Length: 541
Image (cartoon, rainbow, N blue to C red; front, top):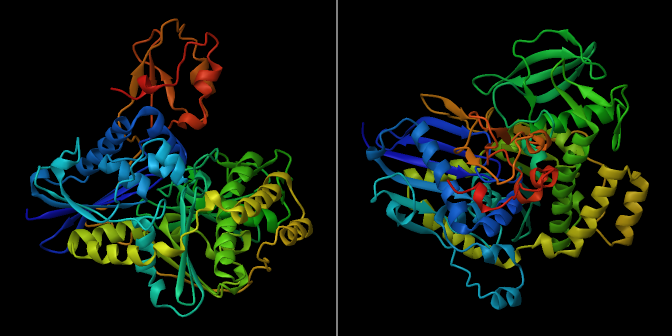
């Protein structure tokens, strides 16, 4: 076997890796993790975890997961000569093991008071020996792309390059949909960038029956004469016809070729669209006897799920409203939209437009796949791409919008939460939008031109196909003095991250990839003896 390169997309909801035969120029295999190795549901949770547990522990967990991905690719480690990673600045900083506190605090004065010296996040080539804990030969070249600014990093650059947004004349928005949604708006000769922690619902997480895009996931729902057809991903990650269902009851009207085991973020968008269209949803409630929408006997969608989805949809819409304001245009002036990432690939783009995930004036919508992994692969094959990305990053640093500091984003998101969480009527939404001096929202274009460039977010999984890692990293065993083994922490964990250890007694096993981390702590709250302490002892091996 000849030279091998490994490309990694360190995404907020999970990692994706590919082995590339550098001599033949062919993809050998793909590995996809079902979750991120760090506790938490979004990039800010990961950052908070790293601050609380310590950078070394967070780095160790990330590299541990990277090692497992590389092992599952099934290639000889000694044949690997290059490794390229792509992701946002937080994920890449955790991988490299460098300072992250500057990403947690926006104000320069605060950073100075804390003695924080922000590292230079420019493109770099390192030996694998410089990445602590990485199971690769010491001389393997590791390529890390640079960032634009703060939370806009290599993954955002990748979507701009792969969409060719820099060479378009139309007012265009490109968005990498996911737990952390990166956006870039081109208006005239300027590009405005931003990023928002949209929340996990767009990746099928924090939804009761949610899952990432994987075999068995409902990714779309289509109305038929006698009911609603579930479109499900098969073992090859292609869309096939699932069961015909009655949304109002847990009944299967007709068997499909693949059984649904859950619903992915794109399916969430679809079922919300169909529920609104059929008047089965009146925000934030569901007008069925069970107050759920059913996708057969095993999978359903609840009112709580609507609110979770609304957080994500609202953040994305507030994001492009904010960018439009910065550019001095209206969202309706954006005529072309590019959708990147797994969610951007599998979602029904027309339905996404109608529920608010795409600018309402979009006349053309392009679905372009996983651009972050594609860029990492480009760098592995042709390392000079790394320095081209660096040049682009330097050009884009002038027009970056910090959504966390933007009063425009704050007001727009407040309206979205009132709409999705409290059922604010649309006329009231528009009235307050005018009061807040936000750019006007028009009704969505009913007939956009939609082009899906790939039928899978990873068009070529390689000759060995794709492997899915449901367990990311190693479970930790913990014990607390005074613990009675009552199981209250286990029963109260919303993500089923805790279990009583197999050997019995008061020992617990915790899956960090399932844990919601510092944003939850129900384990600590629910402990009747108050001995469960959510601290770094949970993360050390």
